[in-house]
Structure formats: structure tokens, C-alpha cells
Image 1 (cartoon, rainbow, N blue to C red):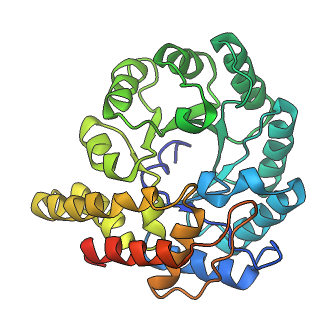
Image 2 (cartoon, rainbow, N blue to C red; image 1 turned 180 degrees about the vertical axis):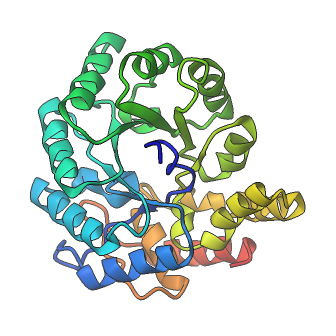
Length: 301
């Protein structure tokens, strides 16, 4: 199998399950991973934005990665987030990913200091050439403060074989359209994932590979159902599920960040996990939970 062929469909960004002391809750973590595998997700993203990597120590990140990868035990593909503002830290996490033998790593452009395209290019090039594991770019300008331009993505795809794709979290489907139109002629096998749940269907229609939707953690019947309906050309089912997913996608506006909301939604779906989050974020409060229940009801969950 080519290294890009395993990256298709639904790869939920898995929350890191912790206890009240911020320690990894291995029982809850295993329960969630087994639930996702049983519901036939196509793979998982560990330590992405929804995995709270930005609020974890290095030791916590390494422990969570090791436990999850070992528990999954090659049952499904694993995409592991290794982002940091420091290039050498990213390489450190990347070498750890090499040892874990994950299927690919996800890398943000460094945030806080604004960087020229040449500096961002140098960051990704240095990381991708320092590790063996394939690299998927992560574009999330609402959080990093900088968009990965189409020209930069094309340059990276053309120049660096170990960069195999992108997760594009831009609230504008035309950005994914332009990546497909511009990058695919240079790299026909370049993996293109939507970061926004409700853009996954459009991404598939335009020729992309799938999505990385947090809602798949508690409503896999919607996102995985959309992907299966697309593959089986069951378009009435596809459109019906897409309408329900669109109603559900307002969940992200209930709290900022949405970490506690997603964990509470998982618990409400019947999965036995604690809903603690890493500080400075706090668990969903009563008002959040009341609003969450209304959104879930509106989406038919």
C-alpha cells in the first residue's frame, strides 16, 4: 500500500482523556479509542487541537502518544500531532513518532511570531527531512494567525516527498478547492482533509480525501455515514446526514475552546469517560450543557 492510500474517510481528532489532576485516564482513553474503532472510523488523529496538546507538558504528550498508539496496535491508521512553536521540539516529537511507527504526523506552522513564507517553508522542510514518518501539513489560520498560502503549499508538495498532504481548517471551502486545483497537478496523490466537519462532503465532491471532524467522537453515525454514503453513491442518505451534521456543527460555538463541550457530548452519547480538561480550560458548565443538549436534539441525537 502506498503511504497515502490509507488516508481517506473520517479521522476524528480524539480528545485526550484526563482525570481531575490532569493525568492521563488510561481506562477512559482506551474506552474512547475502542468505541471509535468499533464504529469503523477510518483512522484517528491523536494530539491535534482537540487533543489539547497546546496545554500539555512534553512528558504528558509523550505518555499520551505512547499509550494510545500501543492500545490501537495497528488496528487503524494513526495520525499523530507533533506541533510546537519550536522547530527542534517538533523534530523531537517526530523522532518519538518514528519510534512508535505511526502512519503520519500532523504539523502546524509555528504560531505567535509572524513568519515569512520562506521561514515557514524552512520549518516544514527541516522537520520533514529530519524524520522518517510522513508529514501532513496543518493549516489553521484562525489559531496560528497565519494562513498557509496556496503557493507555499504547492512549493512544499513539489519539493519535499515526505510531505504527503494537508488538513485544511479554513472556514471557506474555496481554499480547499484551490489546493485541489493547484496542488494535485503537481502531486496527484497529495492527501487533502477538511478540518471543518460540514465541509467534508464538499471536499469529497471536489476530489479530496475526507475529513477530521471532532463530532465523529460522539456521532460517528453522521460523519462516517456521510463517507460511506459517498462511497456507495447513496446520495439521498448523504444529503440527509449532511443536513443533520450542519445542525450539529453549531456545537463549536458553545464554548471557546470547545474541548469540554466535545468531552461532555461523548459522555452524553453513552461512552463512560471523565470530562475533565487541561487548565486553563474548565469543564462544560450547566449553561453549556443545557445548550449542548438542545443542539444534540436538533441534530436528532
